[in-house]
Image (cartoon, rainbow, N blue to C red; front, side, top):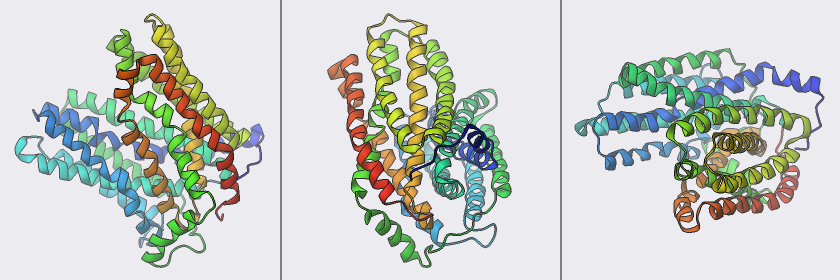
Length: 418
């Protein structure tokens, strides 16, 4: 995976290529449905008078995102009768996803019909997670190794814009019209995303791809775990963004505890922070093209660690919009850069013969820190106090950085076939 440095002319040519535009738009398509079964659905349930106990149980609707590796071999093994191996599955999952969102719009969030809401929500999550599997595989197979960082950055940026439209825009539409109408509008948006799939080129199937379902299930795992240092690379995936993830899980209570108003948090942290993250992802992707993936992982990982220390300083600083903006800008810029390199690095670990299965496995593993290891952050913050808690989050980044030199050498040695 050693990459040559690209000239500025080559960098700009890659940035404005149709491949990057497709990565951006497919990211939007993946991000759009996520919050429709998350915070937006919670708001609809709350608006319908559903009690908090039942609203909490709806977190289970998101299980398909964690378990998607279980059915990912189907996308490597089988090819639909139309549009090809990747585009065929992508169009099918997007049509099904739009239909599931439309079905969700016909349900009623009342005590007697909650099982219908949950069933429709599970269908949305299942087809959304399935779409993610195919989108990730398409992006990996359509981009060269040197383009993975930038392509991943644009994909993540599109993903965040899709989340913003569904999360912020969805709640505004629901307030002006109704939740039912909002979900129908989002279903129409998902149908529009099918156009990207129809216009994208189909990729030639790789040599040695699975010919039986057993091969599709067994070979991806055998291929990965037969590589030297496979478990060490998995440990790196768990640790690289752990400190940053733990810190992010507690930022909103932290800001409120310091005395910042909800308006300041909404304006500076959410809106300004959103565009800082977009800028960080884009700049990070361009930087990766210029210096290569491995060097970028070092620089961005160190940047994530240093930016977390900004919260320690903010804890001792009197409430100030300027100070809050500075900390948020640095933290979100480095987080965007780190995510671009990290997602691109994970993609580079996959074998093109079974990209869907291997990437689904790695990305499912990435969800572990977010869901499980971030759970005790409130207990840590309460027991240690804010400054020590964020100092701990910064120090947790060190093991991942210490693994990086060894991991990049192992990744080079185990470079999968082109």
